[in-house]
Length: 272
Ligand code: ADP
Image 1: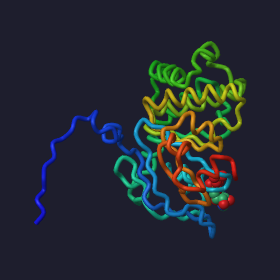
Image 2: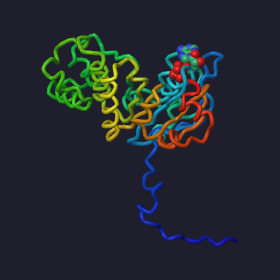
Image 3: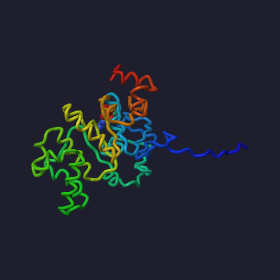
Image 4: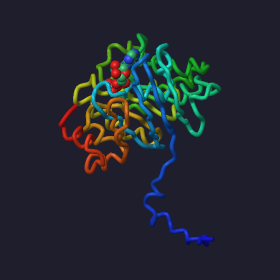
């Protein structure tokens, strides 16, 4: 019988992979999804690690948006959808019938392609989520609103006009307000579905800077069709094609030395 040898444990700095290994917040195992007869996601295996930004890239219609909506079970809002497989959120399978979806929705915030503030004041937009969760104390609500707006890097621009309607803000400001609204529920993970595609270049850079800051506290999955954006802000990138993950790796690896020819063709602009 082969003798087990106990190797001396090396110090963490001598094991770079082990040292940087972060916990998976989401672990997707074999997700398949159909819209009626359309097999939109095929055997997806991915993970979202703590305090990292994961970018989902790929051409239009390849399942990026569908995938992130499986992470908060938003896809279930469509009656024609059927999902099989498992997604573990901090160790619990969110596709287990017993998993409480309302808990998931408080832990996972979402920011959409087009800024979608409510037709309410700036203050009320941010206070909305905490109020739904039963917070009534005005002082606490004020504190949450201020810290969320600061967290979304928009406080200085709106602190003197909190009682004005959110529709009076620019598109870029509205998107940062929507990020503040998302922070107000104290999420663990933030899902972003092409959050800058409706913004001008200056506002896009502000949101990108913000994403880099937010990952200190949150884990972020971002769908983007903009490869430069993925390269600028993400730690890991998943390349989707026709409902499959072709390649998932560290972003620098995907963009400098991809394993799959299809990834290389896509990132070098041969199709897309
Ligand atoms: P992407 O985000 O990469 O553009 P989507 O996830 O939106 O891709 O779409 C993936 C596939 O699922 C496409 O074939 C699309 O037509 C289909 N699809 C997306 N949403 C729906 C829906 N609500 N009903 C039916 N088919 C849909």
